[in-house]
Length: 528
Ligand SMILES: [Ca+2]
Ligand SMILES: [Ca+2]
Image (tube, rainbow, N blue to C red; front, side, top):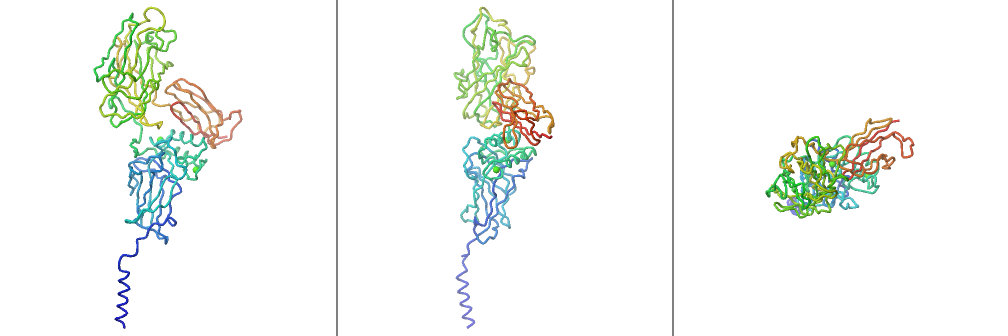
């Protein structure tokens, strides 16, 4: 009887002997995903801890699953780019999807800090949450645990979190529309909670560096000297093609034209551009006013802007940047504060999606100087005076993001060409450096303030600007400056009153400066 029972038991045991009990599978109903994922930058070499979140994976019996693989996919977030280097312990990154993956510990918890930022502000954001969290065990199929709203403090994806990002955030905030990228608490609306989170992050200098992005964009802007790339100007040709550096002009010749060609070699790592800004400076004898022949901006002069700038029909010699059509080039003639023997010409242009080969010299711009006079009789005053033409700097825009540019400053003799020889007193080092690379808005002073505060800001070029005060709710409460302003430093003040002169309550306010180039913001605290 006993032997028979044992036989039955063996039969029963053998029926369950194969690994018929399936491994526990993730169950969405019992697992937890965060309400929102906020992409962050780095602090030194470590990811900003404010971006911490966790995913808890449990099975249908609410038992935590250890060793589950958790993948967060961002492929449905076209406005964002995650970092190509995710340095939080235990994470791996797949830029192809793009996705970040981790695994659960004994308690079923997978820990994350995901570095990244807003990469494409013009992308059409999905209305619903765009982050997809999936978990899998062993060779089991991935199970979707939930979809999560994804925001990012670094609103342009470069240079970490700074005042530019605050300005960009305020653009979203003052629009009052839902933008997932700026919804830091994931409640599907932009409120003062998001504003306070952004201000706290900005003022606390969190996420002060960006990670290199999966879309190939480097983390930070850089100022590169011409030694790293090269800037050239030459007459009639690009320099590598044999262009000459000195040209002459006979005072009585009033026909024809000369082409001055600006060219460059891209610094290492700069592989494309979508636009550029170049500065050319004209310098004559020290202490003597720029000859009338070169006063392109003088309404009384005999030359009157006998200069045109174009990238079309450049002389041969090296490949030219295609697409920077003449209609896209603008020339500015700032004169304020300039020494009497100098004039600066700024040119901005677009070059959509141009790829740059390493080591290749490209011609970028042709300055066509027309010999013909445009008014008066006889030779222009000082037509035989020598003049140096210096390609001061070049700023290559690699992306539509406002910060994303590589500035190349001139430092080599290749960036100087002469007209009838070198002017007296001229040395390359004498040429003042170009205007600051970007427009700026200084911190107001004093801050906090009870009475009037002084505000300083600078423009790299003449621009229409708007400087206004906003309250915490995003309402514009006082316009401090509006209209066209010349390049240079400007000042404004605010007495703490609203548009109708009414005193305003104490609290946090924002200064917001919008120029042609940038949107900048500064917090101001008013005490009563
Ligand atoms: Ca930034
Ligand atoms: Ca929100």
